[in-house]
Image (cartoon, rainbow, N blue to C red):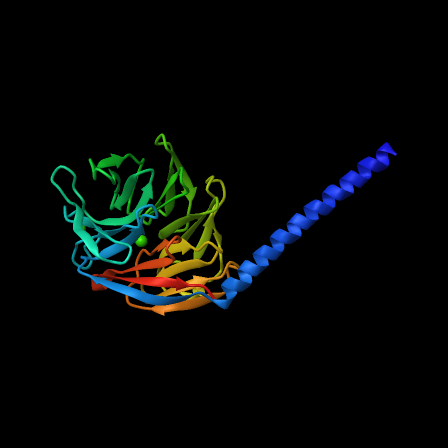
Length: 303
Ligand SMILES: [Ca+2]
Ligand SMILES: [Ca+2]
């Protein structure tokens, strides 16, 4: 009897587990179907007046959006020229301070690109240096040491660690709260990087491919197999339903990739979209137009 009881209990557990697995599978399928039907964009605002904007980074807490400005002539985007700044605007695109954080002889900015907010600090990828600036009191700017750098490009966080892509070295640095550094295997010319529910994703500029990276650093990147759709990829973000949004800088398009990692749709065609940002709370997509010194804000509309 006792054995039967154990068997019945085991069967019941298995059935419950199966039920939960089936529910989860159904939920995933529903999300995938929703995503497959396609997100669309509705233009909400155009913001002019930037100087080579590379990255738009919304702060979900305040709604403020930080904009990196490389401030350089063509072909000088990676020069340590002592010029560059970060703007701050409202969620709807009113510029509060064009030079919210400006270059300064005591805290030089050269070519600010990727931005990321973690625990009250704005992190800035500035050519070969990773910088940190407290947001509320705006400073002082400090450098976060990294072992060896080439061209630091994008930044992402999972809420604890910071991930910094280096396009020249083809790797991602994972920086811990105490400053620990781990090298994450990444594709050559890695550009945009983003975190989503414990997973790490990146795009390659020259490879124009999307990858899942191993946040532990042990395993090589796993390509999606969507390179044929793109020319040079810059930014990547993930929506709550698992849909990927990527910006194809030289392809002049922003596209969605369904959670199946295969179905690519063009969301909008526009010139030189660089490092995009999303505000999930407000359902907004922020797109800098690098070559046009402006940014476009879109409402993300569900199917
Ligand atoms: Ca500059
Ligand atoms: Ca970038």
